[in-house]
Image 1: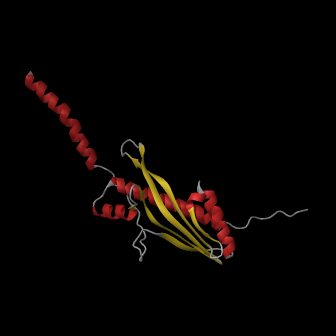
Image 2 (image 1 turned 90 degrees about the horizontal axis):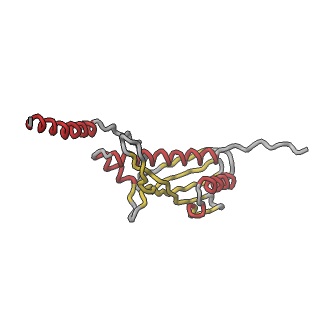
Length: 190
């Protein structure tokens, strides 16, 4: 009888442990995006030149208006305003989250900081988003996550990189739609 109880107890303890190991092996890997690295700085960089209608002053005004409406605290974000040169520079941040695989529960993982620059010229503007990294006691660049994740997969790093890419692309999409928006039709005054 004692032997049967010991065997049953061993099975009760062993089965969950085996199931847990099997779950870890079946972990679904998160596909990380391919990032552009700036050739000069070797930093992750989102940049593009966008052709659109408008003078330097008009495009600068649209860019400034977008920054003021997009960011909750534009005074804190906007670092350089050069209307004559058509240049805006800012430093902003957004939150990232840790998400547990099976449960989907999210906990705050910190903030990602980035620099954004918009340079306007007649008929076009150029944006650059770079110097992306986690805000902590010392700046932790996103390039380290990408490099470490390529060497040995870590779900946490992959999750951060996916969130980073999604948020930066959302920012760029909002900016592009605001700056390239056409003139609204004006009603005739009677």
